[in-house]
Length: 88
Image 1: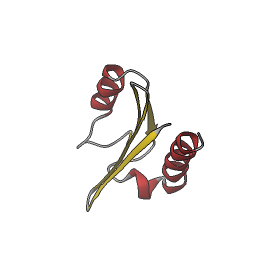
Image 2 (image 1 turned 90 degrees about the vertical axis):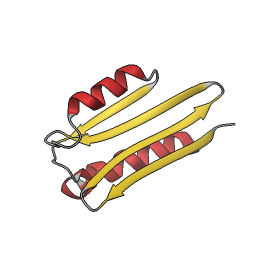
Image 3 (image 1 turned 60 degrees about the vertical axis):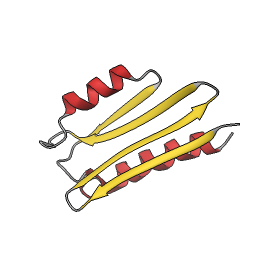
């Protein structure tokens, strides 16, 4: 049985999706950010992705509010992550 944890961090000027699920003793992480986000640089996400085993990272062509600037892609990524992990 998988336990799903999904966190959507949205503030007035920020939208970053960090979703995770637990399967046995493994944690899977999904990160999304904008390629031009000065407040949350790509290098930081790459470092987090590298540090967390079983993680994925999607960089959208966007600035600081990728969920609005690239709504279709952001929503699709979040939906796919949740569907994949809720299906079993």
